[in-house]
Length: 82
Image 1 (cartoon, rainbow, N blue to C red):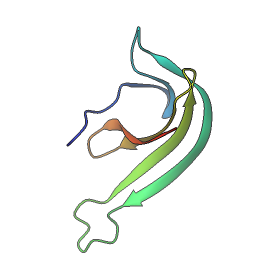
Image 2: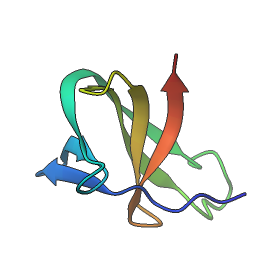
Image 3: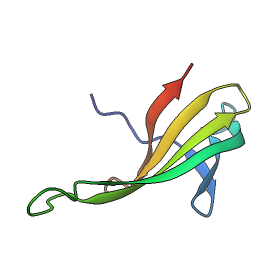
Image 4: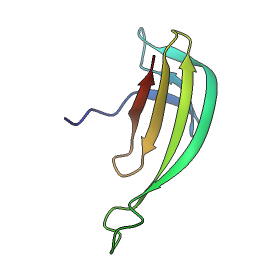
């Protein structure tokens, strides 16, 4: 099942809020940021992409891993904690 891209507000490329009004939740703390390169091992590299991943703690208590999917040009949920 393919999920639709998330609505994420950013400052530059840094996420600052998830969703839109009235269900918008602001990022309280950016816990971690890392980069994953996917598909580089394929010969030829049919779908190589770089993902900027963020672990974010939101004001509503959720802790989520979000990443920017460059191929689809949208934010995706990688993991929900707790």
